[in-house]
Length: 311
Image (tube, rainbow, N blue to C red; front, side):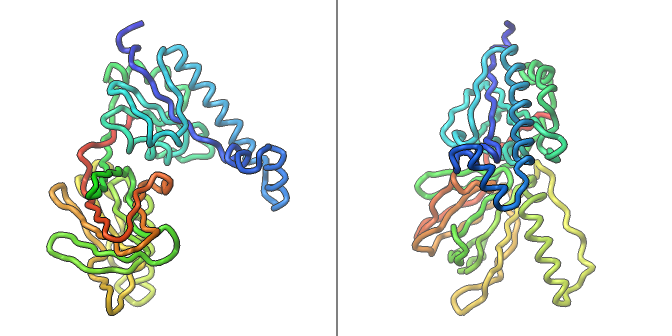
């Protein structure tokens, strides 16, 4: 075995929709009954499950030939400690790549698309059959990588949360989020549906929908429609963008600081005024969150590390 093959490969997998249903209803038969009783197509869940398991088995066969490897479900990512020389492989949808990347620190990440007929795979440039060729090149650092900027949320108590796509700061439920926001010399109290802080990669996702919707609503109310089209940032952009969702003006809340940009030397500060249910989570995963209740202050900055996606 060569020195390159001594590098351990960590395979990140996810549960299929069918597995989630079986966990909820205890058996596959119960899950089938539940879905078909509602008129849903159980066969689609079964096809997705079968394809994913087949591709996972193909991936594992390649890893067995490689040498040292470990398989973990994405639910264990928050508590998993990666070795400094590990090569990481994510087998799943684009979201799995993003959810994995935020826990890495310079590790090369390979995104494998298990079902090209189902997933577009913006972050999944390869399929499992490519892995045998990829691993030696990645281990020898002879494969190209694409840098991905990350955002970082830091609490006063030292807790940190990274984001590959975006950070959400607000309330867990559909109640209004109440907080103080400060950027540069500007500061105000707001009541809103929370705010999104987006990276370059995230500018193609949730953030894009917020801006697109805002422009459409403004146009419907007679604002100029000749504004330039929305353009996402590069994945390695050296700035973050933030937008407040549905800001509400009142005697005690303002709406002037609802959009902005953060460069490397800048930070966004937000202090919670919510007695309960305040949260900060990243990349759509609320389970791995920071509590954000009254008095808690978070500082949002560009992260001091970046993702490395193999291309």
